[in-house]
Length: 223
Image 1 (cartoon, rainbow, N blue to C red):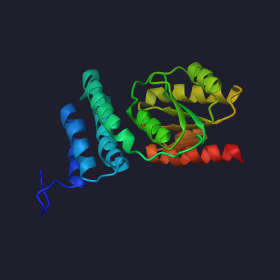
Image 2 (cartoon, rainbow, N blue to C red; image 1 turned 90 degrees about the horizontal axis):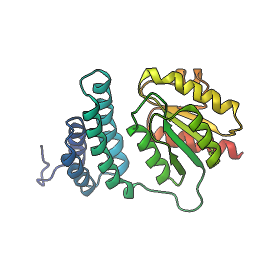
Image 3 (cartoon, one colour; image 1 turned 180 degrees about the vertical axis):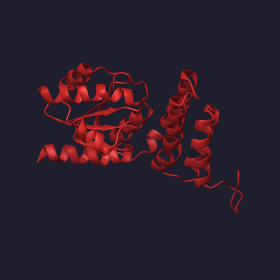
């Protein structure tokens, strides 16, 4: 790995290496490089947005194309989880009262949850009360948990196109229930146009856009 004039590796180089290590399923390397990137002064947000996130997107694409299988997916998820545990204390939060409650989940038929988990961490770091339902969540569970927790926003993710129909069903069930909040969706299987087509209130392409959109949705409910 290239080093700068002082003999140390730059944070940008470490983040690039982190992307490679996620793709290579190098769990120990991901953990060590995450710590090194923090020590080099890289913000946790940058490490996620430019390193871990793109790496996991590549893993997800390899899985969909049949190059990786479930064991590889689980290895990458475990490596990602350890890195996120290291980064969580370094994500700046908002002190005081929670700005709102969010229920998150990956829709039924889809077991990809890394992107959704990153969204949950970023929202929680910003002060939101987050209830993560995990992956392969049936429509009725989204509705039940949204009502149970008094959610302001329900967030759903779908990485594979076959799961979008379940997402549409979930949005419809939420809109037809007594749930009075908003719905945001995301994931590689969606675009702004398709999200609008299934009746979602907002679409986010990544965790940081999700944070901005959730803030806006909650602010709209308060007005």
